[in-house]
Amino acid sequence: MTMDVMTKVIPESETRPDISHDGGDRERFAHYVQKDKITESAVTGMPVIALCGKVWVPNRDPKKFPVCPECQKIYDEMLS
Image (cartoon, rainbow, N blue to C red; front, side):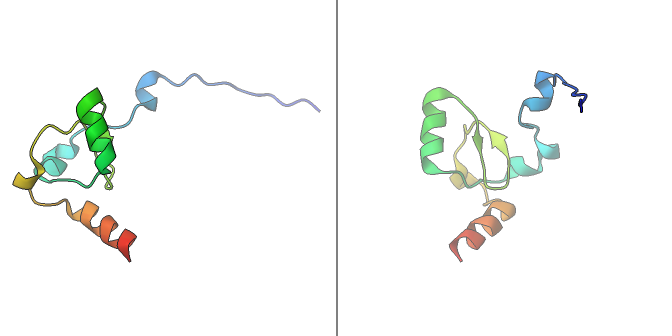
């Protein structure tokens, strides 16, 4: 019995995380990210991933923005 196996090369753009701004909505919030990841990002410049899925390189003071409702909901669920 032989099986035909197809191989597909996925363009690099399809394998990268979506770092779009979702129309800007997520840019208005401070997001929850593991503290060690924030520190690592500050040193390496690598993006972080928030609980809500937003991917970005932190560069602003989160205290100036309200907490992302989606991150807050996920965080609360993790604590319960």
